[in-house]
Image 1 (cartoon, protein in one colour):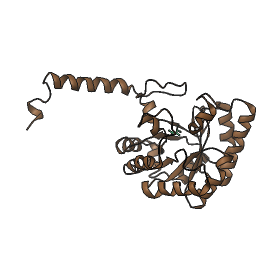
Image 2: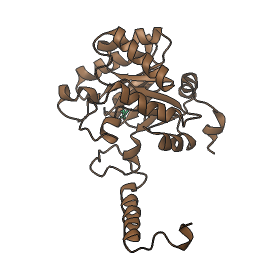
Image 3: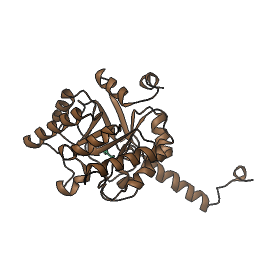
Length: 272
Ligand code: KIV
């Protein structure tokens, strides 16, 4: 068991603030189901994100836009049933918080009540301030998400690095300060220059978790299926693959199929 795992029996938003204050890096991964959620938790990951990337990874959509609130609640409740230590954060899906702050609060309440998760995450800065404030007032912890915000892909047009230009970089810093000031417990910064992410981290007292945002932030997040090597088509520069699971699964499943066809499986010891 890792020392961080022994030190914190249960991760809360308060633990994360302590980790930031002590300069301890925070690990975060996605999970969308009971089995992998349990494995990620037992491995000692601090935050499990039930990301709307489930729309791509689990359902095969091209973007994160189609996933619904009911589907997010299904994934989140499956993960929550497996988790004993990590903080479980759930993405508010596209279209459930942008229209008005009352709808945002209703969506966040459904996630908390029906899944048992510990916090929600939503994308955007000043344009969603009112929604975040209303959710926070109800006692629901909120994580922000700035930089490349995949729910706005049709506005951006591409998944390339954001905030390279001065104006967008300055806006990002302003948004990060605002999210901290209104009470968010952390912020994900996606695919921005590492120096800009470092500046955001230095300026804030809440954890800044990066994905494609360099190593001068307070923690890192990756999509589980990407870091396990299950998605060969997706290979951005920021992704480190820790397994070639795609290859291993192909081999194992191919072997099983061959064994069935050759009648090697089941053998004498594998039947009643
Ligand atoms: O949905 C997701 O997986 C995310 C991460 C990429 C941060 O938001």
